Each structure stands twice: as structure tokens, then as C-alpha cells.
Figure 1: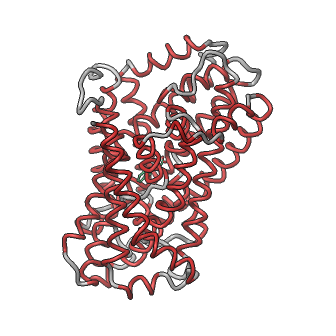
Figure 2: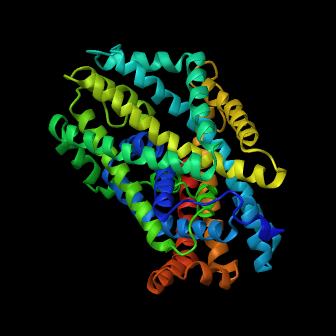
Length: 456
Ligand code: TRP
């Protein structure tokens, strides 16, 4: 039975498609929207340094472990984990890891679609010239107006989820594969164009200073936890998205090399987005780098509204954000869809609709947390902030920790050997070391200290 089911969803046409798909998953709102504002509210440089260290020393090893598990299982994370656990003959409870991931995925998708909706609506808001000549106050008012209008938020959230369903419905080759191969080159081109633009028109020097001036005094455990949580979030690890994509990866490719390429692209996009956004922020009077989630939606429109050709460039910028969000959200949907298709023998369309509707309903919580429900608090957070904190700073690190322990200590060595054949033995040694000692210790310490800092 198990053998028959292997690879039932098909596979990427090449290693390059896997790289594009994984990069598409990794590069998203996390890079363009979240990274700049959390770097801003954590004081810049030192935060960036910790974030990059977390990517390299924790994120990359855990991502390799996840890809390996997925490729070996050749199924959705839930079923892949179940098979690997029984193949290794270890405690069945390890298989729950697959569930933890899928749950985090649905929670993330629910708020992700709402924020992506902001970006979609801004393509029109900026492109149509409504913010021509706007100053900081006008732009802030326009953003607040959007947040205060649940029906507009719900409309765009629905459009975004529909776009995701349209891709995931098409399956691995014709849906996800074609989408990422088309979208990712466009995304890179737009980003490079904007970089050139910000070098000439923005305050590039100040932006570079802000992001690369490493002042370690400003660092607290809370910001280290945030940097680590964000490293998981931005690499899309800890919840099975990358495991699901790994299941469609060609057997002979080197996992180590491939993951390093994806992590490099992901960090590069975050840094470039940070440079673009802060160049524009610092060139615009009256806007603070620590503006929070509204950073991109308030500061950039002011800049775009006041420069020749800015409306067009602004619309293009929000197209970029929407594309990045789109190619990420499909990776949140795919593991769940693949699981339903495998276990319930359901068609892809039906499976998509089920999860899209669940994410849509949960997303209403996020929609209302910006307006009629903004007074409603969970542990001192609004609903949206709570979901964001719960997933990125709690669920992803826990699941990353468990993945590191599982692959480092528990899984059958033969599975590891067969999957890692293509990876340089020296890299493998470092990888094992990182999974067994470095990642568990670092994740555990940061997690405990960060929560302590936050709540006590
Ligand atoms: N990595 C994406 C971003 O930075 C978000 C994302 C997509 C994600 N898939 C994920 C986060 C899986 C965690 C797990 O925007």
C-alpha cells in the first residue's frame, strides 16, 4: 500500500523548480513587510546580525532536516512522518509532529491572507492616484480607513485566497510548478529595479547604516526570540511546508546545496527589501523606522505619492508584495491539501475549498482585530498579534526543536544516509552537529529567555 502511494502527487520537473518553489515559499510577507518593521522596532543592526546567525546556524540545518524527511516520505507531512516513524521503529508519538505543522500552517494562512489583501488593495489605491501628493498624515489616515472597514478587508482576503486556490488546484506540475517558475523571475526583476530606484532616489546611506550598524547594547532576549522566530517564519520551516515541497524533489539532488541556495535567496530578498524600504523611509520626513506593521503601508505611499512616476513605481511595488505573498501562501495550503487527497481520496479542488474556507473563517478574527474587535485581548495581544506571536515565536520554534531532535537522535540512520548521499560529507558532519547540539540548545535557551523577558 505504502509503496503504491509513493509520489502520488507528482514531482517538480527539475531541481531548479524545487529551488524556485522553496524560494517562493520562503520569500513572502515575512521578507518584505515583516522583516523591515521588526528590524525597525528592534533597533536595526544588532537584530539583523542575530537574525542572520539564526538563519545560518539554526534555520539551514532544520530546513535540511525537513527537506530530507519530506523527500524520504514522498507524501504530505502528516503521512510522511507517520511512515518514517514506523520505518524507524520508534515511539509513535513522534508522528504528531506532522500535525503540529499543519495546524500552524492553517493559523498562519488565516492572517497571511488578510495582510496580503492589504497589499492587493494598495496596488489599486496607489495606482489610481488616490494618494498623489499625500503627506504622512493623509497616508496614515488612508491606511487606518482601510483597517477600519471590515468589508473591504474581507473582500481582499477573499480575492487572495481565491488566487491561492486557483494555483494549488492545478497540482504540483501545472499549478505550483508553473506558478513559481513564472512568478519568481518577475519578483526578482521588480526587486532589483526598486533597489536601483532607491539608490538614486532614496536615502540609501542612512538605510545601510541603520541595517548594518551592529550595536549589541540594544539587544534583549525578547528581540533575540523574535529574530529566531522570524528566521523560522521566513524560511517557512517548522510546519511542513518545506517538508511537503521536499516530497516532490528529485531523488539525486544534494539537499545541503539546495537548501543553502534557498536560504541565500531568502536572506538577500529580506536585506534588499529592508534597504529599499528604509531608503525611502529615511528620505521622507516625519516617519519613524519603528512604525510597526504600518511601516510599508504608510511611509512608502507618501514617498511614492510625491515623486515623478511614483504612482507607477508604487503600484509595481505592491504587485511585488502580492506576488511574494501569493507564492508563499500556496505552500501553506499545499501540505493540507495533499494530506486530504491522500487520506480521504478527495479531489484537489474539494480539498482546497475545505482549507480555504477554514482559513477564511479564522481570518475573520484577524480582520476584526483591526476594527470592531480591537479591544478584545488574549494574553495582552489583539487576536492578530496573538496568532502572529503564537505561530512564529512559539509553534515554529517548538516544532523546529522537535525536528532537530528527531533527525539528530531518533530517526533510523539508514534513512539519513540514503537521503544525504548527494551532500558533501563535511557538510553532513556539520549538519549533524548542528542538529544534535547547537540547534536544540540555542532554540531552548532563546525560547525560555525570550518568554521570560516577554511575560515576567
Ligand atoms: N516564509 C513566508 C514568509 O516569509 C511565510 C510562510 C510560507 C511560512 N510558508 C510558511 C511560514 C510555512 C512558516 C511556515 O512570508
